[in-house]
Length: 221
Length: 221
Image (cartoon, rainbow over all chains, first blue to last red; front, side):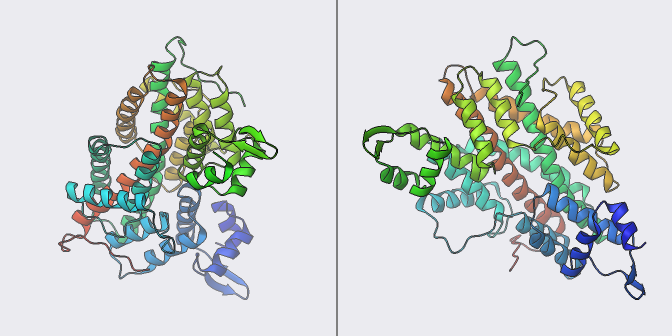
C-alpha cells in the first residue's frame, strides 16, 4: 500500500509516518518509483505496537526506539527482550543523584525481600527501584508495609505472571512471542490497574456509602 | 517553623513552596511579622501528599489542586473523595472527540462486564474508559480478552480492593481515612505494578532462560 493508505488504515497522520521513517522507528517501504514506496502488513503491525507503547505504556519515542531495536536484534532471546521492554518502561536510573539513606535502606529491603521469595530478577531491574520508592514514600508518611502485606501483593503478582508467561509458549514465532510479552506487560497492566480502581470504588460504595442503594458515585466537574 | 525550615524538612525548595502558596495548593502560614509566617506539621503533611500525587501518581498540579480542594471540602464523604481522587488520576474525558465504533463497542462490553459482576461503579468512573481502551488496543491487534481471563483479573482486583478498603476503617479521623485511601490507591498501585514486572521477569527466567543458573538478566545500556 502507498503511504496515504498506510495513514488511513493505521490512523497515523502522513507527517507522523514520515517522522517515524526518518527516525528509524518504521523501516523504509519497498521503493516502487521515485519518491514512492510500498508498505506492508508488517508496517501496520509495527505502527500498532508503537501506538501501544506510547499511548498505553506512556513510553517516549526514544524508549520506543530502544524496544524496536531490540525486537529487530535477532541475537536477543525472548527473555532478554522482556528485560529491554521493562527497562524502557522505566523508571530511568538516575545515577548522578546520590540516593538518600532511606532510599538505600529501602533498596536493601527490596533486595532482601526478593531473595527471600527466591525470585530470579536482575540487579538492574527498574521495578526494584519503583518498589523501593514506594516503600520510601510510605515510610516518609510515617507508615510502613510489613512483609506480610508485601507478600500478599507478591503472591498476587506471582500468580498473574505465571499465568501470563504460560501464554507465551515456545511454539510461536519469535516476533509473536515478543509482541505477546510486550503487549502483555503494558496492556494487561492497564487492565489490572483499571479493574483495581473499579473494585476499590465498588468496595468503597459498599463500606463507606451503604445508604445509596444504586451506589452511584457522581462527581460533577 | 519558618519557610526556610519547612523547605529543609520537606526537601521542597523555597521558590516551589512560594509557588504552591500562590496557587493555593498549600494554605498560608500563621503570620508572625511583616513578610514572615509560621508553618506547621499540617503543612509538612500536605507537602508529602502533594509529592505522592505528583511523583508516584503522575498527577498534574492542576489535578493535585482538585484532590486537595476535595480534601478541604468537609461536605464530601470519604467515598466521594475516592471518586475525586480517581477522577484526578484520569484518564481525562475527551468529550470533544466522537468515539469510534470499536471504542463504543468496548465501552458497552465493559459496562456489561461490570454489571455482570454486580460492581457498584459510577457511570463516569474514568477506569471504565481505561479498561475499554485496553480492550480496543487488544482487538486492534487481532487479539481479544475473553470474559474468563477478564474475570481472573477482576477476581484479583476484587480481593485486593476488599483488603485495602478494610484497612480504611470509620474509626479514624476523616483526614487520616482520606489520606489512607489516596495513598492506598496511588502507592499500592505502584507496588502492585512493580511486583508484577518483577514476577514476570522471574517466570520469564524460569521458562525462557532455563540454562542461566543465577537467572541474571543483565541489559547493558
